[in-house]
Image (tube, rainbow, N blue to C red; front, side):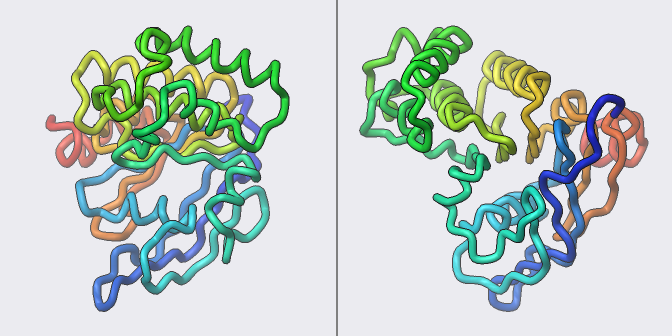
Length: 244
C-alpha cells in the first residue's frame, strides 16, 4: 500500500439492510481509501450487490441502518443522479446501457455533468482506442451489441464522468474468457491512473490479483479482510473461492 494516501473516499459503518424479515446485510464495516482498488468477493447471494445499491441509494423499499460516507459526507438521502455530480460512478450488474441510443450517444451521456467540449471529445477518442470494437460500431444502437461489448461500453460511459470513485458490480459475469481478460486489463489500468475502485466480483482470483485489499462477504457479514496478495495465499480463501 505504499504511496497511497490513507484518506477515506468511502466508509461504511454498521450497515444493515433488511427486506421484510430477510436480513441481506448484517452490520458490515468497510472502507476504501484514496487510490485503492478494493475487491469485495463472496458467493452469490452474500449481499455484495445489496451493499453497492445501499451506497448508491438504488435499493428497492427496505430497511437500511448504519452510516455511509463518501469523501467525508454522509450519503443519507442522496439521490443517485447527484452522485454522478459528486464524481461517483457505478457500472451495475447487467450493464444497464441505453439500448436505443448509439454507442457514441451512450458515451456522451456519461459526460452529461461536464461542459469541457474538447476534453469530452478527447475522452471519446481515448475509449475508442481502448475498445476498438466500440469505435467500429460507434453509430450502432447499443442494444445490438454482445454482452462483452455492452460491458466495455458501460465501463467507458462511467469513466467519461471522470469519477473519483468507481463502483463495479460483477464486471466479468457472463463474459467469454478473452473478454474477461480485456475488462480486467482496463480495471487495472484505471486503478493505475489513480481512480479509486470498489470491485464486487464472483471471480475471486482475478479480483484479488487486481486489488490492493480485499473483503470476503458471506451471508450478509464480512468474514475476512486483508491485503489481497495475502488473501490469495490464504487456505480458507483458496478452499472456498479459488477452487484449490
